[in-house]
Every structure is written in C-alpha cells, then in structure tokens.
Amino acid sequence: PHGRHDWKSFPSHSCFILYQLSKAGKLCVPAMNVNDSVTKQKFDNLYCCRESILDGLKRTTDIMFGGKQVVVCGYGEVGKGCCAALKALGAIVCITEIDPICALQACMDGFRVVKLSEVIRQMDVVITCTGNKNVVSREQLDRMKNGCIVCNMGHSNTEIDVASLRSPELTWERVRSQVDHIIWPDGKRVILLAEGRLLNLSCSTVPTFVLSITATTQALALIELFNAPEGRYKQDVYLLPKKMDEYVSSLHLPNFDAHLTELSDEQAKYMGLHKNGPFKPNYYRWVSRRFMFMLKSVFQTEDMLETCMSVE
Image 1 (cartoon, rainbow, N blue to C red):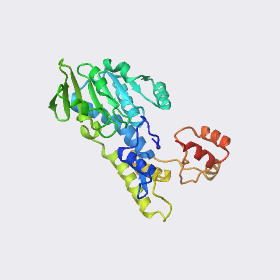
Image 2 (cartoon, rainbow, N blue to C red):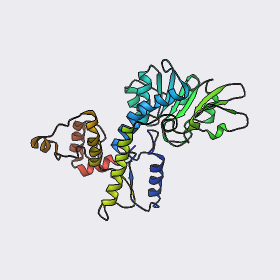
Image 3 (cartoon, rainbow, N blue to C red):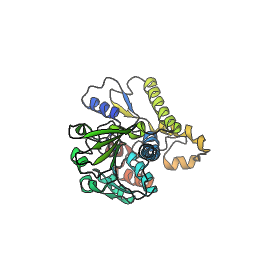
Image 4 (cartoon, rainbow, N blue to C red):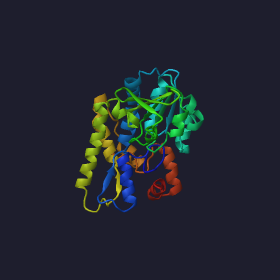
C-alpha cells in the first residue's frame, strides 16, 4: 500500500495502471487512489475480507476449517483479514511474504513465514492476496496434493497461473457454479475457485455497510477533484486527504451508537492539532504518536519527516 509495489498487496489493478501512466507522463487528468485510503484499506480490505474469505470458501466447498493446512500468500490488509478469520476457526495458517516488515508482523501475530515451494505439498488450501502475477505457478500447481483448494483474494485473475492449466493433458470438470476440478493424468484433482478471479466478488457477498464506506470515499474523492481550485492537483495520482477519511468514518459511527471524545483547547494545543481534525498528519502510518514525536525530534521539521516517510 501507499504506492509500494510489492506483495503486501498492490493498489487495485486500476490504481496500478494509473501509477504506471503517471510514471510514464501519460496521465491526462488528476486521479485519486481511493484503494489506498485508510477507510478502504482498514474496513473493506481488512474487516470485510476477514468475513468474505470464509463466506466464499463455505459457499463453494463446504470445507471444515479446523485442522486444515492453509497458506496465505501476502500479509497486507487483505492477507491479515484472511489469516485472522482462518486462525479463529482452527486452521493451521502459514504466510508467504517478500516484505520483511509484513513478514515480521506475521511472525508477531503467531504465523510461520515460509516459501510456497517448501510447503506446497502439505497444503489443503492456497489463498493469494498479493496483487502480483503468477504467485502460484504451474510447477507449484503440479506439486499440490489431491483435493487442494486454490483461490484468489488479491486482484484480477493473474495471481494464479490459470492459463497454464488450459492444456491438452489436463481435464476441466465444472462441479458447481464457480467451482472447477482440474484433473491431472494420474487422477489428481485440484479445486480451482472462480477460475482464479476474486473469490470475494465471485463467490460471496459484501455487506452493504462496507460498500457504503467505500462508495462514500469514492464520492468524496470525485467531489474533491471537481471542487479543487485550479492548480491544486496536477496530472498525477493522489491519496485522499486524511480529513476526508476521518469524515467518512464519522458518518458511519452512528451505526454503532459510538460517541467521540472531544479535545480540549489545551489538549489540542499540546498535540499540535485542530480540535476538529485532521487528527493524523500525512506521514502517519498507524504507529504510536510517541514514536512520531521521536522522529520529529530527529528530523527537526515535519516537512523533512514527511519527505523521508514518502520515499518509496
């Protein structure tokens, strides 16, 4: 996230294309990357996927999760949500990662970090959450055990090398909607869900509450671009201002009868904030404020710190 192109989960496919166009100088208009806004990442990608992974697997396979060996490729927000749900139901979950920060997070959350090639023969379920391509290769599909379930929670249909499975030596058998058995010459079957497309969009439903959060974020992004003074946004890709993320969240708090605490003038001055927000600076990455104070003392100014934190 936040523009870093790795297995933590790329921006959505559309955002990735926008970044490529911008880098090449071919983006004709300003664009907002809603996918990497806090409200989208935390609620749609984390909390919603935490539920939809179970919904999609249950609807398609009726799997019993307890004791199953599961590997989740990618420990970004989507991967974190999937792992939390599967672990809670008794699955034995391990992670693959390329990013040492995400890998360390997975370790601290109690998951083994492995290479897919080392564990592929033992896995009952393989889930991709990376946004990359060919995360599960044909060679790895060949080594899977009979009955292994393979699905994608990342993006598009590129994470699993499905094209390589459409070969003369393999047989496809549609056993129910969105469920195919890929049969090898020796009789081995791999269960492919949604032909490698997004499981949560193909095989499960999305709660209207989460859709409301994402749709509100998208609407505010369009309003911001439309109403912005000329010259504020150039032909580049921008993240939603934190003030808008906070506004989207505040609109949905009444659903939980939640009541925010208000800062006093003294508290706001001490923290260097406005009483009505935004409550986080642009460089904030969900770490402790004490840590950010320490960084500010090292870098002396917020501009220097923001420059450092924005380096990819």
